[in-house]
Image (cartoon, rainbow over all chains, first blue to last red; front, side):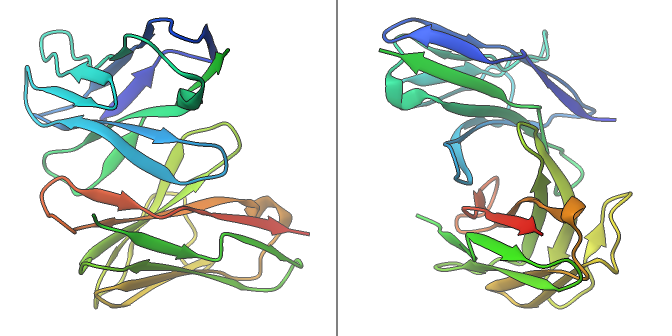
Length: 112
Length: 116
């Protein structure tokens, strides 16, 4: 079945460091891909999305490119801030079904 | 932008009682809503898909008689945890599709349920 795999955390970075969180997926067809962020004690917020191959989603300095050849959607940010500390979820929406499948989440802590 | 209001944000109840969680789309009509459960430091597990005016579709392994879902209007879906037990303690999150259509899924802020 369809699934999403993310790099295991927790990830701890110093402020202004470069961030990469790897995400790969398994899916039939052409899913849409998402990154969601969850701040402590809160629900999920959509961070960015890409709907077809080679699309690049971007928001708040974060970027991810839909790579069909490697079935990946890695999240990157050039310079993280303390306020970026949260849990990040990679997710896909199946093309045939109205369902969003989440990866296990990666916890990020940014220290001053 | 699209907003989904989930209430309550936190609830503590005694074993054996029932708890109702509400999920409202505030500025759009949501024909489909989703209910997720999140265990500590784990990902979200889809429990059920709720369609307005029809019965919910439950994922495998989810007890439909325990987790009652009602989607009586285009802006409101409710999840009732019946005869709650401590193992039902979890973070429950709803999501609504709509408010822009296409790939827009808006999440509620979640409900922390603690059963004592």
